[in-house]
Each structure stands twice: as C-alpha cells, then as structure tokens.
Amino acid sequence: MAELSFVLRNNIQYTNCRDTLKETSKDTENNEYLCQSSMEVYDFDCIVKKLYPQKQPASYDSLIIDEKKKIVYCVEFKNQVPSQINNANIKKKLTNGRDVLNNICTNENVQKKNYKFIYCVIHKPAHNRYGNPLVDRETKFELKAYTDTHFDKIVTNDINFFKNEFRKEFKEEGC
Image (tube, rainbow, N blue to C red):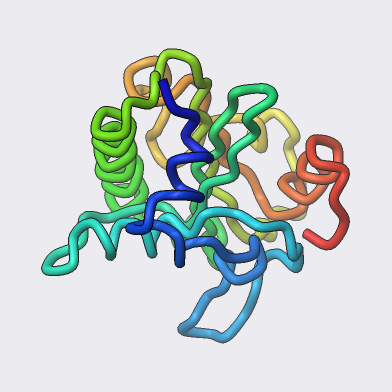
C-alpha cells in the first residue's frame, strides 16, 4: 500500500509536476498570483497533462498533501469574485479531477479510504459592503451535493480565509 505523496514524488511520470503554491495560484491571463507561498505542492494541472497528453479533462490547480493527517487538499484558484465564476466549470473540475485522482490511486495501489479529500475553491473577495459571515461559510457554486459522494469536505471561500487557514494549518507565511 503506497502513500499518495510518495507516488507523486517518485513516479517518473509525475516528477516534474511539483511547484510552489504561488505558481499554481497564478492567473496567467492577468499575470497575477493569488498566493505568495513558496511551499512545495503538486501541480495537478501538470499531472493531468502528462496522463492525458491529447485531451485533458478539467482539473484543479494543485494538491496539498498532509501525509501525517492523511488529508489531500484539492485546490482550485479563481481570480474572480464568486458572482463571476462559472458553476458548471467548477463542478466539472471537481468531478473530472476526482476521477483522475481516483485512477492514480487505483493504478498506484494507494488506499483512498485512508485519506480525507477536501476540495477547495479559493476566489477573490466579493465586494459585499454588508459582509454576512453566514453567507461566507456556505458552500458556493452549487457544490453541496458533492460532499460525501466525491469529497469528504468542500470549502468555497475567499483568498483571505484561505490565507488565515493556511497559516494555521501549515505554519507557513506568505500565502
């Protein structure tokens, strides 16, 4: 039984798919980064391109794997406010990305049941002058139905929330 991070780190197919969280958060169209962290993560878009060179399924930007806690964070960065984000696109990234990850785990003998999978959609803060914390905690983009069927937990929140949680969880500055 293999660990997911061991497989991604040591399989020749994925070895060039490690990058920083900063680079995986880059909005290439606007040449902007949502995160500044130099923490090493797995560039999931890179992995998908290597596995499917002809036609890539939709995928999230990065994987952050905490082997001690057995948590896999599947992170999608969107340099947009929630109202500008295409729900169908986010759902497609969730389902296709999870299928690719399932295939990797199956093919590499990684026991998925040993991990908790969390899908994170990180976006720009909405310009809501009233700021309702209850609304901020809701699962956005019509993803609530995918909890338990595809992921153990789904987090949809802005980059400020992510930065705070990131610092708490990884004791890492700069995101």
